[in-house]
Amino acid sequence: MTTATKANSRLEERFRLWDANGNGVIERSDFETEANDIVSRLGAEGSAKGDQLKQAYLAMFDHLAQAAGTQRMSQEQFVQAAEQEIISKGDAGFASVVQPTIQAIVDVLDVSGDGEISPEEMQKWFAAIGLEGAAADRAFSELDTDGSGKLSTAELVSAVRDYHLGRNDIPLLGA
Image (tube, rainbow, N blue to C red):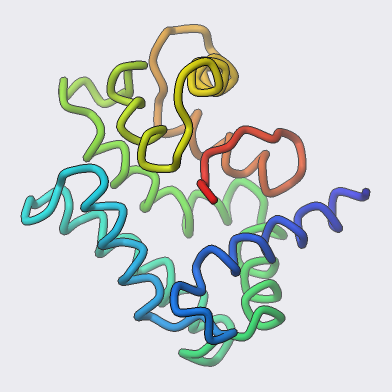
């Protein structure tokens, strides 16, 4: 499978996950539903950090919807917009579109306030996406590319980028 084919396949899977109501299009309400679910699973309801996470999530939708020229993206429109705004722009695309959401997730998970995620802090995310035990430990090790025992926002953005480019299979997105 080519990198482009794998990237499109992963974007199609992301579309299916984001189409919360299953109507075949992604709308802002789908992103709101997922953002609310994430905030709830992370125990951040009613907090400033939870609200920032929701806003970052919705800003990502707004960016993609603007690129697609519609507030109701079909799978084809979503894949095309994500390819145009994120994948084809490489690091710059992930930094501008994806990083704010990952940073907001890091901010919610980072209870120690050191700006990075420890294995214990990451357990909340892994539990929220259904990854536990040895699989979670393995994923954390793969994510910790600098071997520091903590995860930076940069490491997480790189992991999401590499997942969508077919360079890794680390389960960060849930199912």
